[in-house]
Amino acid sequence: MGIQITPSILNADFADLGAEVARIGSADWVHVDVMDNHFVPNLTFGPTMVEALARSTDTPLDAHLMIEDPDRNAVTYVEAGCSSVTFHVEAAKAPVRLAREIRKAGARASMALKPATPIEPYEDLLPELDMLLLMTVEPGFGGQKFLDLCLPKIRRARQLMDKHGVETWLQVDGGVSLETIERCAEAGADVFVAGSAVYSAADPDAMVASLRQAAESAVRG
Ligand SMILES: O=C(CO)[C@H](O)[C@H](O)COP(=O)(O)O
Ligand SMILES: [Fe+2]
Image 1 (spheres, rainbow, N blue to C red):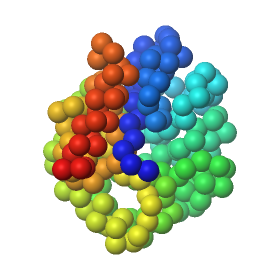
Image 2: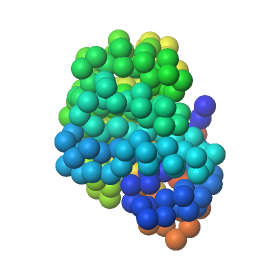
Image 3: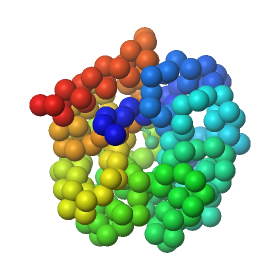
Image 4: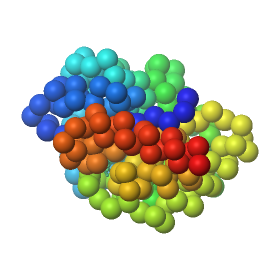
């Protein structure tokens, strides 16, 4: 699949989200951060808004659920029109069942790990997942500084994916910018969320292109 750029709308203008998404026409996905003020100390939006956003764009939606009860609520986001749904392993009660339900409902199933959550206990789940999301900040807010301490886990996840021979995508989320994307790509990530880097740029779509170019040249070495 190669390098994919998935801008987060967390730092976009919430009063004009349709227009904000139209500004990133070359994005592979639109990353929507769903926060419930319980799993994380911030509140964003729910399925009704996600459904409206899905209707407003042809770019597929990549939902990142930072919610306390994904087992009960994740499939709602598939029904709302998301093509990929990510739940947090720290919140899921039955991650294998949940990943299977998301796939069965017709979306790509993805699981997220916070910075302090190790990958090794979940190695055997990789074949159940279309994507693994490694957080590179503590979830909850956009605009935080990238945590370099997450780089060894990105490398380790890539090794485990190679070992299991899976096609699982490896997404990084948090503090990804022109300054940090090369380190992530060199470590083995192939899907890059960028929120503030894209929406604080004068030309968000040009920033998507620059991020893509930086990641591709890092991979080429
Ligand atoms: O999941 C998230 C926060 O929990 C966001 O996707 C992420 O923080 C994107 O914003 P930025 O690129 O500004 O860090
Ligand atoms: Fe996110």
